[in-house]
Image (cartoon, rainbow, N blue to C red; front, top):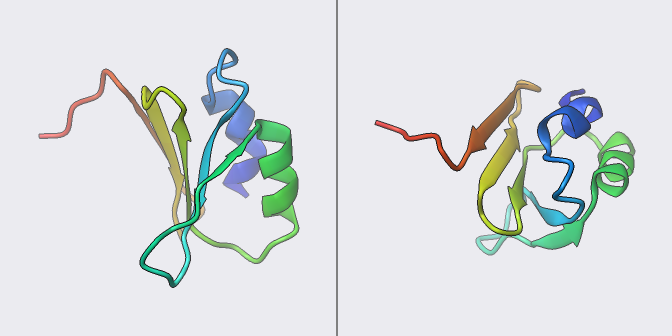
Length: 79
């Protein structure tokens, strides 16, 4: 149910972003959307993993198969 809290994580100034649902295909689909639309879509589906990426690639959010939200701002580094 992490999708219910997307508006907490997604920067207010990014009213449009890329929504990338995990699928069985090698090439994942990419949709331009907004918070309310993606929340409504996810609410109607069985649980699945997805990625949300800022259009300027300055942040990324993931909901995994454990309903955990992972938010990565651009300033973050992985070592």
